[in-house]
Length: 192
Image: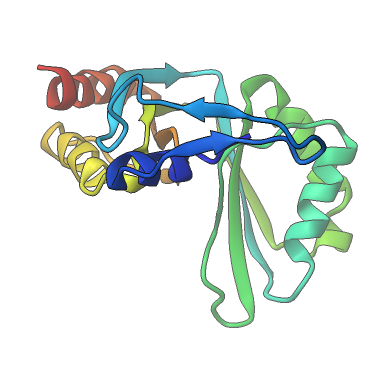
């Protein structure tokens, strides 16, 4: 298996790549250019409205708190997508995360049942949000992609609730009423 970044660097600097077996001493597979990878290849914009955000407010700012939260949810077989933890202040912090819309109520019940163990003050949740993602290869090594996406949202007057990035996508949470406008603005910025 090859890491995306290693392939990008090999292409950028003209390094020959060969994938070899760690078990047998025989020739491997030569990796050759099929598409240019030194530039980010934006492939599309996606929207997911089957999402809910839960925020736990004023958790104790100590080791193990995030583990307690997500262990409880994992035990209930609730999948988590985006996670955002605030910087601690006054010995507390907040953790926000997303779940599938259908899991929101069950997640809240499980968290409420374990409130003493987890140690949070308040819980807030909404399913009136959408996740909008810019998808493509090489996102992390292409400077300015996130800035362009955020500029498109700014110009469309769409407020961002949370941000998540990976090698293949940049996702933002927005109000579900603004989701179509966000998709149109991002699409126009990258494809028009």
